[in-house]
Amino acid sequence: MVINELRKKGYEISIPIYSTGDYKLIIAKKEGIQISFKQYITKEELESKWYQSPKRTFDLSMDPSGNLYENWHQSSGKVLIRKLH
Image (cartoon, rainbow, N blue to C red; front, side, top):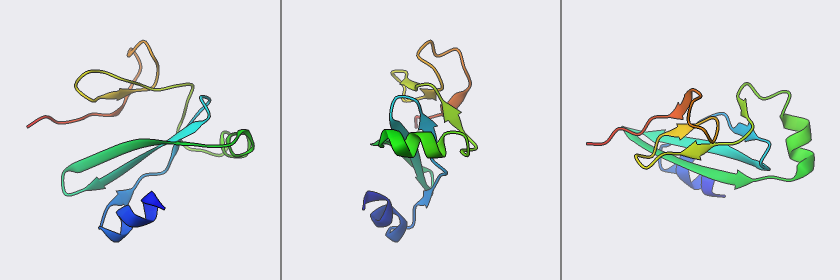
């Protein structure tokens, strides 16, 4: 429902990043604006989509500036870098 509304408003929706924490991360982008949110999923969806997904993570963390990392230690690659103006 939220994804459809974002698409109607012109946002480009990313391919979901599946996490073993029972959610998928969705990133929506439009003209320099980036919105990210978790969408909780069932165990069945996780099991069916995990191996097919081009992007997976065991969990995500966010630092105070809004950058998202692929692990809680924030030592992995950044998933999303928030640009502060």
